[in-house]
Length: 435
Image (cartoon, rainbow, N blue to C red):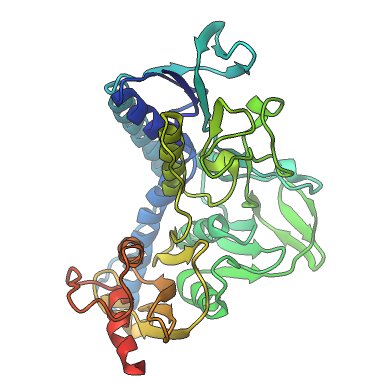
């Protein structure tokens, strides 16, 4: 079968390798860089900066409690951004070799689709397809605000020459929180401007307050803000002018233009797919950010794999029941989204343990915590939120256990790696006090 995949991010690349290994003729087309937004603009960039951020905060804490006498280290911001770019190039080379080693033909260039002739055109070359998979991802959403062109987005972070003295972040989601954590640790005074609530997706006011007071340094959050104008040095709001370098963290929009006249889109421009990732054109499938929904690298990969398996004749549905998510801060903030997440039951809270990455913050009462919501009648775990250094590792294991039928009283034989700072599994034992 001739399969063409447009977009070499997590959804498209893994789908391409799988299909090629199964004996299909696979062409993977990417306009810019292999690895998609995750490697080149978003997740990996945040992770790289966060490693530096945590080092600075740890050094500062050691100074405060008197166990080191030297000054807090100073950063070379241009060296950080330059080294991130250098590392990205190395990773691109590795994953390109990994991809083509499976038999995938990798083509770089801007693509267009002729659905009548069933070909994709790149640089005047035509690539025939029996089935086409669109994995073109997303780009920053630019709000309809006067002067929005004066603001930066996540795509511009590696172009910044120095740490801003003042940073104004427009948006209230994960990206806003993560860049507030990064730049505040490096010395910026940060204002976060939210149209409604800050981090409303975690739906927990106690946790929102903890994040702002314990995890975000020199950061002020403004909620229910109306923005009227953005200048090159400030934001004009209904509460006055706030000065600083402006960063937009106002979500993303689907890169669906390539098939906008070929398949059905929703009102936001996301490609509409059925439960098998098939579009309104029976020979075209789509996966990842371009279809909207849960925007995360693992979800995109899951959707891409479901799409390619269905292209090859299976009937696979992505599982959106329990989706583990994490906000990368000094302590990871891990939480659940999905169709089976609910607040039905008893919510139990356990303080975080004094272990790796948290021991030296115990004196500041900054150990984090874990919350679980458990249905006392069925013993089902319905929701989890954890603010601890190891929560982003523990939560996916917990999701797997729940999907495999484990309930709150079924963890007697579970042994976590010690030492650990996460309380997710400990809460299942603590819960028995309510039985």
